[in-house]
Length: 237
Image (tube, rainbow, N blue to C red; front, side, top):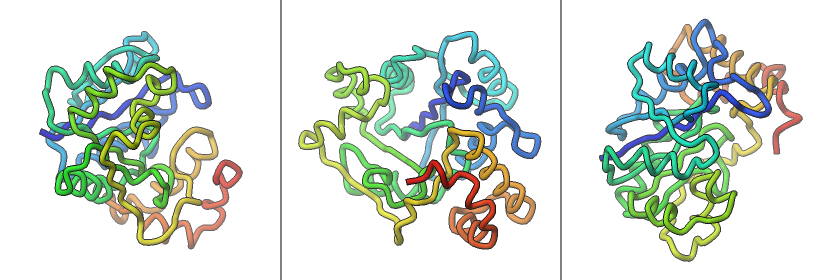
């Protein structure tokens, strides 16, 4: 089974509550879930949040839309991920983060399929980065996650889940999916108000014509709307 885990929390230090900020009347996280539900490679999708009271509202939103949610440690995200897998016993885990509402289902599927077909321990499209920041996908075997959980000890390894793999890359077989062109200058993740303004403008510009718009359509939209593209340029690169 391929289990996707979308980590999200309300207590973002730079933009608190961003995951529930509405885009066209729908919480940002729900918009991302709508796009992830288009994936063909995932058997199950779980939102992994914390047990902190601040995340009660996030859990409530998930309940309202019938989305499975798991609650675990706020700071030890690695433990939250690992504990989330224990019940479901997946063969592969897809790591996603809740600040990427423009995630592209076809890109997710491409990374997952490459990972499974080539039998890598860990596969990503984010290192080295060639896709826009905000289309990041990481896939690992259940054994890889177990190894990380058993061996990771440093704070950055515990907070960022897969940092251990990149730090000790010689111990793992690693696959990468690169974009056809270098689009790494594009920033579509949401950390700052300017990032949210860009994402919101993209949805408002594309959703009505095609609610399943892909990343190529986003690129075309930004090319035709340089004012939107410039909204968060100070944080790119």
